[in-house]
Image (cartoon, rainbow, N blue to C red; front, side, top):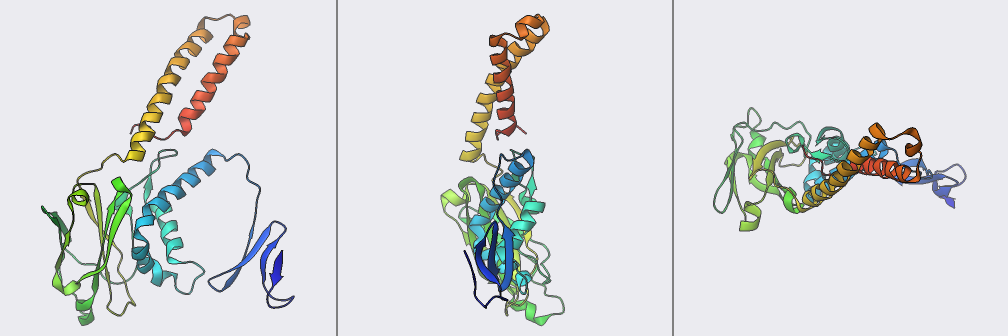
Length: 278
């Protein structure tokens, strides 16, 4: 049931038939509810891309809120929606079911504030030294820009957000890390935000530290894929051999029909099982 909050001429709130009415950031919105059928490969690919994107952004909510918040002002979108849309379109690589993040294309903020030159990141025994050129151009206020750092740890599906770790004028900062964090895969990013909060820069990728490590989830997917592939190869050899050698009557036998069915099922399962090498 839907309710007309402002009378018969006002916007509905609720469900009417297969339509849902609601308010989004002060704007009346209506969407259709459809009956879900068996998803196509394109739909599965889209669902997988959304899941990978959501997993990426989960540990950086506050950074995203600032990084895309100014861009979202005055629109029906919010910062997370904009970040999700960007990364789903531009920061993923691979094809379903092996869709992954290209960390070099991750953009955690979008804005007009200038970045800094000579960005560097160095790993030490106890943490990370990050430096940049403190030159501020013609805008004296840029001296007070806040420095924002994001450290992503894909191996543990976690991250560290530093939203005001230094000033642009300082030219460097140090982030202390424990043994667990400093030795796992790190993907690092930097951005600058004006002291009045009215401007922000695009983020910049500082790079990868410790290489790319296979996560527990990726290991499980690889092992599952290898198991399915091994069985498929066995069945495929038998199936293809019988097609070459069998008489047409034998190919209509119950045993051969079962073999063909298993071949088809395994082939389809292999296509949708993540963990394919390369």
